[in-house]
Structures are given as C-alpha cells and as structure tokens.
Length: 273
Image (tube, rainbow, N blue to C red; front, side, top):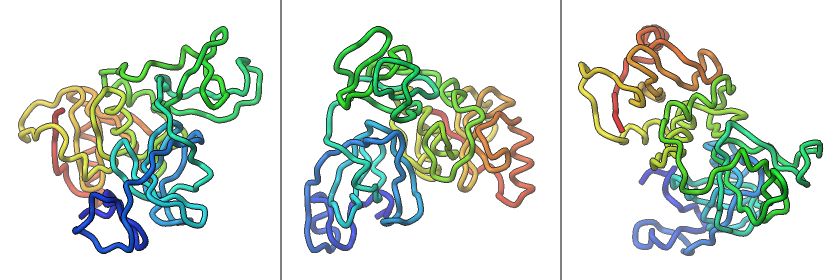
C-alpha cells in the first residue's frame, strides 16, 4: 500500500484497513475542514511538507495527538499531519475562489486589515451578502466577484494553470503563494471538475496514453520522472519548475532537450484527459 494514501500510523488506522494492517485501534474518523488560508500536510509532526491544503477543504481526522491531527485529505486521499489549531468543525462549502487569489476580511471593507489570503480553489461557506461582499460562516468577508458556486467549473485546464503564472516554485506547494508541478496540474484539473491525485507519479494514470507520434493538443499531459507539464499548444507547455523557480511557459522541444541534458531523462508518458 502506498504510504501517501494509507490512513494508518503506529497508533490508529481507518476502519477500512481492518485485516490489512496491524494497529492498536481503528476509527471511522471525523470530518474537519481547514481553517487557515493554506496549511502544510506534514510527513510526520513537525516534519517536512508533503503537500498542502487550502481553506475550506475537508480532511478526515483519524486522531488528535500532541497538537497534531493525523488526517486524510478529502480531495485526493493524501495522508499526513496538520497542526490541530489549523482545523475547525466541518461544514458544507457553498463557493470556491475562482480567481488567482483573494482576501478574507473581518468586515465588508477592502480597507480593513485582511484575516487571511485565499488561493484559487479555496472553499468558503457563504451565509449572506453585504454590498459587494459575501459573508462566510466564520465571520469573514470575501469579495463576491472572486467566488463561484460549488459545482461551477472552469473547463479550460490550461487557462486555470495560467492563473498561476509567475507563482514561485515550492516543493509540495498547492497555492498561489507557492506551488510545484503536480500541485499546478491538480489545481487546474480540480477546477475543471476532474478528479486528480496529488503527486506526478499518481497523475500518470489520468486519461489515456498517447502514442509518441500522436500530435499534442491543448490540455495534454507530459510526464518526466518526477515531473509533469500541461500542453498549451503543439509547441508550448506550462509547468511549475525548478529551472525558472516559478510557473512559466516553455517551448516543448526546448524543455525536452533541457531536461534530458540536465540528467533528468526523457519524457516517460504522454496522456490525454
């Protein structure tokens, strides 16, 4: 079992793993939601970041131990640890942030000092509106123009990815403040209504394989070992990458040559959604 997707540690495991793993206890877990703008999902408490979760995203909490919650992310099944203080009670999100970013304010007033920065894809529960602002169930206010109802999609995955142009590269990042290659692809696909796992090797199962001679189309995925990019057109791609240390456009042929020359090998898969 992939440890990134297996909801079990040395103290607790999810009920679905009975008979599959040894654990002192099993639980159904409790659904919670992310309370901060963006939080790290850690490999172990106070450990390195594996991925991130955005405000309003649901996580299944399996335990709360010494200030850290052991969770499984609802959006992709990723497991890890989030500081307990960064989670709150579950609630049904009504809207998501459909712009590159926005702010949560303590009042319906753009001159107020913001409570949090929200990234594309963050979720909120709207309980009312005041002028041009949507009031959330946490008491904060978001500009209504920056929100779309849950269920509404932006179907052009490349346009979704382009909202992150210039975003600094961040290993394990999932937000407008910092993002990596698989985080970019996941954000773009989720906003278009596609399920998408968290890491590039998992994303190689998406869609169907393309023959090496098949012409590339907008929205196709190119994979290297440990890296993924979205095709913009037959000659250009967009990706979060450590060469530019940002989300950037790059010529496909130029990228293939550069990546192989730096020792990271050839394209290993081409996929179409």
